[in-house]
Image (cartoon, rainbow, N blue to C red; front, top):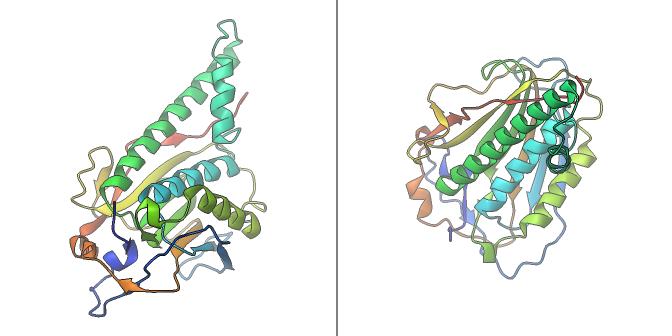
Length: 276
């Protein structure tokens, strides 16, 4: 479906004259994923709590659908770990469906059910349009911004896909196995355990993509700059291979950094607590 390529190589500032080499993939089992965890202070104006990064290297290419899955699963995880969802997303959806046939519920329960329905609807819409976005363009970076504004959030979670190699399903690692290894690395990094409880906040989603990708739901933000203040966690995803092959002509279609801009989801996902 898609030739093997890297989003980072596709958008390098001032395109390098050196051709980057990329691996040719043979039959793939699903070997263990190398996990590197780095905890470092932010180089620019660190806020209390600092900036942290978790790096995961997949030993093979992944699909665009896989990149979409990584993004959605990390969004669900962040919202739950930061107490913006009372239950993990899938459990919350099941629990809510079981609560629907209760017309005689107490007023407070009805309010909670409405809030739950709203956040589930909002997330479903975000997931649907993220899937479209990933099908239309390479997506080098995604931001999950909690609290404050898109310009000055309280917490920032970046999903860095610039070093991911994208290939067809037959040449790629199994998405489910990559998701398991991704969350295993987050478990090892233990980046959420020492955070204090927070009130409910709104989550804003920013996605980087080609300016001419044709997406009509996300709103282009031509002058958007990634915030440098606030607590930040970066999840770096990349692929490595033993062999190399020449980058395909697909790079020529998406070669200039200036052609990649930020898009903002038109809805904010509002966190909620039951019985709050």
